[in-house]
Length: 211
Length: 211
DNA sequence: CGTACATCTGAAACTGAGTCTTATCGGTTC
DNA sequence: GAACCGATAAGACTCAGTTTCAGATGTACG
Image 1 (tube, rainbow over the protein chains, first blue to last red):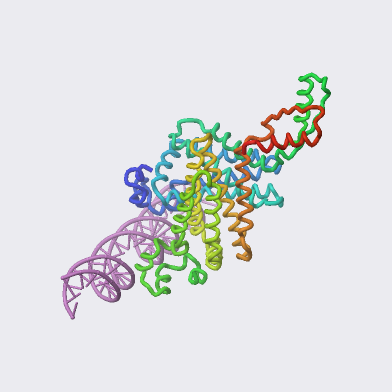
Image 2 (image 1 turned 45 degrees about the vertical axis):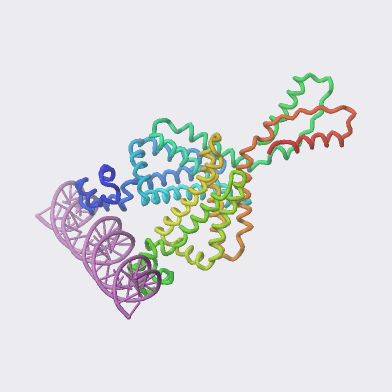
């Protein structure tokens, strides 16, 4: 990282890195698959954790699992704020790294898509909905993460994340359920009923609605 | 493409390609920025077209612009079905190309995000909503395109695309408007009013709602 | 017709990432 | 002490991508 900051990413060779680390080039490549891999060393492990978290859930707890999984990813960045910020500044500058990061994000999205797809089963449009939900969940995470990184990691992004995820979940939940406008409620009351009694009756009816 | 099919992507060197094309290595690199670029030669041009289409729109016609733009992209694949299918089979096999494609898609998503962001202005959650809409639009396109490619390009994907985009638009439109349950309509009628008159009055009220 | 200029092309050297092969060192087991 | 195993090192090798120089082709102008 220090070398990259000093000389730029492209101008820093693997030999330079190895020399600074006091090891040989061979050893560098035994530890990291590639030059970029040294910058994103733990994506694989995190991906495995996310996969495990999702697999540990059943259809009934799908939303909790998704929320949890996204929280895990964000926490992973926040827990290492210093590294995350440094990497963010670097990735923003170097197109090759940006592409690499995007490819990583796509792998998370794929996990979510497969999970949601299995969750939705063979309901109509399941494929489309799985794709959309996965994309939305990942996009929500990225939006919150980017905001936090741009601000220099100066606040706790848990609130914004929950807000964003709530937004996503509301979006899809809403779509799954018929709009209230498609329901018709007809109520009749005695003319002599008190306003309180009318309100109580209406409230009771609303509370009894499914969903 | 033929060489890639015969020997695999990695095993085919740029020298091989140049030799087969009857040009020198230099000439190859003058035409294509890189080896992958020979497989995705017109992404840049398409990206420019999409950008132009979006810029040509105003806030009032944003949804039409987005729909149009996505249709342009899909049409670009469908018009060259043979090439698209061949490339699809190749990209599916070679991780490096998959990553490259994902990075390209991210560029479209970025265009949409900026456009939607400008469209939404500084309304609350504009950043989040722009991110989500862009991700959803791109995801919808990809889902339709992948289905078409997997089926060997044997049908016209316009219908599925419109369906998917309709789903996306409905999702967000719904979210933009307050749910009917949050509106309270209190109506009083003369006891002597006919059912028809009551219905007409209600209908008139519903029609007058904003949105 | 000849000259100046721009564009396209080719040849070849060069850098650097990533692979692979071989050798050495340190520690462990029997 | 011998056999073995993991980590490291050294160095050759392939190939993508860059750069530099040189030749070829076409074009405008005097």
